[in-house]
Amino acid sequence: MDTLIYNAENYELKKLAEIAVNVSVIGLLVLCQVLMPIHASNARIAQVTAPDFDTNNIKAKILNEISPEVRKKNFDELIKQKYPKAVIANVTDGVKHIKLTKYYSGRPVRINVVEIDMKLAGDFELTPALSSNSTLKSRRTISTIAKNSNAIVALNGTYFKPQTGVPLGTLMINEKFYTGPIYDRVAFGIFDDKFDVARLSLDASIKGSGQNIKVNNINQPRMLSTHVLVYTPEWGKFSPAAPKYGVGLQVIDNKITKASANALAIPENGYVISGPKSILYSLLDKKTVKLDIKTTPEWNGVKHIISGGPYLVKNGEVFVDMTAQKLGSIGGRNPRSAIGYTSDNNIILAAVDGREGSSIGMTLMELANFMQSVGCIGAINLDGGGSTVMYVNGSVVNKPQVRGGIPLSNAIVLSKKES
Image (cartoon, rainbow, N blue to C red; front, top):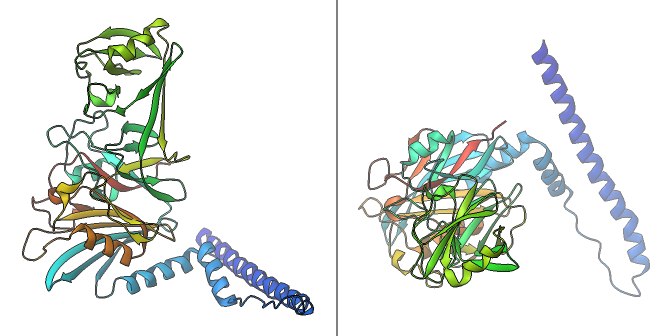
């Protein structure tokens, strides 16, 4: 009985929604009819043509926004049209897994795609995920990362240092910075209701004793002895030793508690600042400091960031800036991973197999053209080669060189939202 009542209420709500849409469209038509004579009376001053309103199209768009059933049907049709001759599987509402083969110079390339309508998949959230919740220095298989995140979809993420697993590039999860950018490489920003791609630079500083000291990076390898770096607890138990003529400052609850050129314990409620003595000693005057972290561009409201590089699609156009982002070593035809978004805010994840006769891989330009062809207006390349691996509903769905994929530092995952 409760089910019958519930279904009846849903039916009434749907009917009311349809009535509201029809009334809105009728109102728009009436308005046009009223305005047309007014425009006609001013014809001597200027030739005015009433807009050619496609009322059926307007109605369809409104219904698509308010009716899950209509949106689901439209999404199903979109995927069928966009990926002809592909094998398409439904993962859950609003999430499709597509397997297809394309040919380049007569040779095959296997591609696995997951496309997500984030409104239909409203119970799920797209986030980066680390291989460990406690440290950056960790590597695990994508199946382990996915299972630890309760994910139904996962794709390998940004570059990382093979020896340690520390991500090489910007990584933010739930508004918390884990690592800063390298060479201002392009990053993918995830907001509550949109996505963005941009080359990201760090705008961070340590303020104290009347000083405003630039922070060059967070939890990243030192590139210059003159750089000021910050190490948080996610880096590990101890910071690296300070550079030559440098010093490390241990900070607990915004208070400098220790200074040393040697490795320092990184406190759970603080961090370690490491850099030249000539710059950092001035902070010791009052020993109270504040770490301020921003980015350029300033992505207000961004919840998650994962970097990669180079660009693949920028403002709807193919754009591959490999040299500008110092990524010359990843050229050629290889296994590839990519993430992008469409004008409708659908997410597209792609994993391309390579380095074998049955799938030769893609160049970056081929990958960029593919991402644009499936509707991306913004897309970036992720770590590829041996790292390329995609997981859907409990299984690795592509064929990485190492069975199950090599251990990874991080991934991009689609998981059920926490209630």
